[in-house]
Image (cartoon, rainbow, N blue to C red; front, side, top):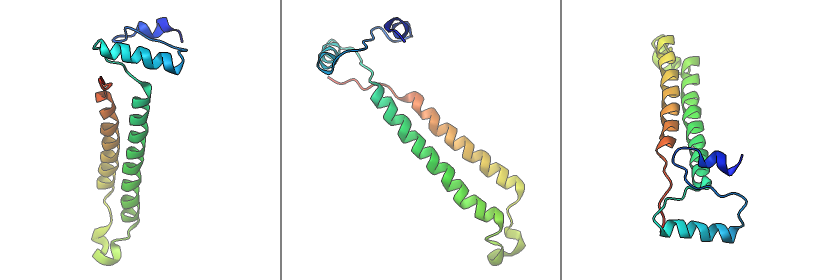
Length: 116
């Protein structure tokens, strides 16, 4: 994609590609000294990877608890009343999905830090 594609996006006034590291450092410092916010894709990438790990933890946790309970692991301790009602299982799976989606929506709140 070209510079014109990115600079046409809302909130992006200036985009530089193919810049060597020293020139990039100088340009970022110049923009930040002038009071501009400079977004770096690395910050967003790290946040996305952290979010993926959290979502995998949520999904694994729900399945690690829910599958044995649905299979009847509690029946020897609590009798047949411990079998998981299918409606409760469906609600638990729905809550699992809601927690993953809600956690993912937190990425929308990420803003580039303004460093000076």
